[in-house]
Length: 246
Ligand SMILES: C[S@@+](CC[C@H](N)C(=O)[O-])C[C@H]1O[C@@H](n2cnc3c(N)ncnc32)[C@H](O)[C@@H]1O
Figure 1: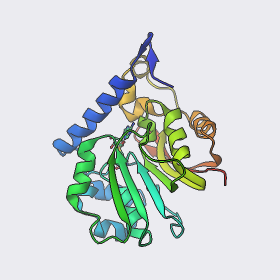
Figure 2 (figure 1 turned 180 degrees about the vertical axis):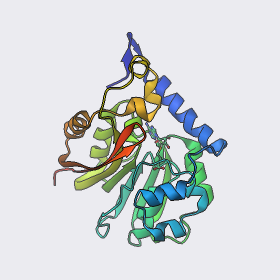
Figure 3 (figure 1 turned 90 degrees about the horizontal axis):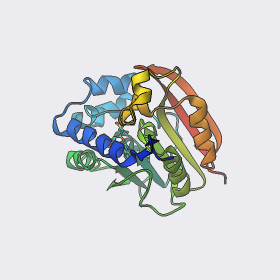
Figure 4 (figure 1 turned 135 degrees about the horizontal axis):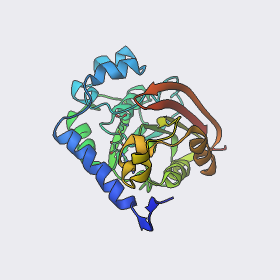
């Protein structure tokens, strides 16, 4: 659903501001401090932290480790939607078999450029395809992916229904969604509720757990599990696991 407040559709404005916010973070290297420590606290293995370029670790904007406990042996194509600096795409590509592929997709071109310039994927067995695009309208064919991962990006989707529907569309039957995302457990402050542009931030974009579950289910996913609740600033970070019927 589009962000319509007072009869006006704010979707494009919100998306533009999100994009500009992340462009600025890259241009000014103004990421939250201690990216590597935050990744370690989120459960990323030590081996990942030892090999990932410092520049990318410093740009970590996620809220957990979506690929934790994933069996990647049969994954030939994976897509990281809202990949930011490409950390999770890199993690997948460093574990997947030769001949497999990972699409690293983000609408903020500066993020994608940063990932490409880091040359982090040199020497990995899987190939990585960076794509600058909107996760609500994926420029990818239907039923091509075995796995879709996302880290703290669905909460920023202005149209969450389109976002989950697109993830569902590109998955093969039996494919899996593994995401880390943010939910809100209490009421939002009045100033956030009244501000049509609040969705620019994770605080404004996060929905309650039940609403999130309904969106994922409405897109067609089954076996939806929302688990591993962890406090994250004024929100709660959760792991999302769901499947496309086989
Ligand atoms: C909180 S950051 C997380 C980045 C990355 N997943 C990580 O863990 O470091 C959210 C990312 O989602 C991207 N994003 C937000 N809305 C998007 C959309 N509609 N389509 C594609 N990317 C989007 C932003 O550009 C940003 O890079």
